Image (cartoon, rainbow, N blue to C red; front, side, top):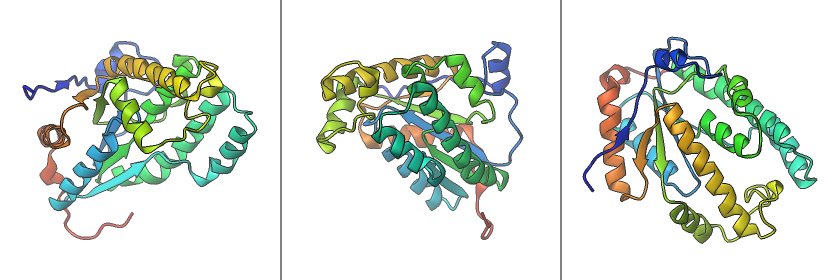
Length: 251
């Protein structure tokens, strides 16, 4: 391990100059900062963002955490649609976007306005990857999420597919139908379908990592080594003293 991190950062204006479709390059000016983590299930991204959250809290910084779980406004419809296998790729995409918009307006933007460091376990790029794999047009998906600001830092935890699969299957002996990508008709075998589905998502993440200049982390490194790199990058790119708490701030 040589301590090198593949950090590729481009200002939002550069993204606009390169003619990227969707995802508005001109973000509102918020006093807060947004850090997102992305990666396959089993990449360890949730562990890393939790450790970063604890580290920032111990430094007495204003920090908030949000993760992409189905909100109450779509959970029932999603559950019924999955049970009856009625969800097309487009329907999936629209439900994901509705779910994210609720999270974005309720739990991300208000905190950014109040000067928090917002840590997001999965952001729009999860939808861009999964919905593209399900067959939705990439430009259409990007335009759908055009309302969302780009993160100040997006960590992508890149892990070999076999490693991610081993981690997931060791703790989750039974896979769900849509989780395994069975709706795509990749294979009649649940576990083979899951592997093929995750492999396609990994390929999509590789495209997104280059397109949006993710900070790419080697997720096969020891947890402590990864976290040390994450903290170093955050401290280098953000003015952390600016976010020190000076009293209670309402949400």
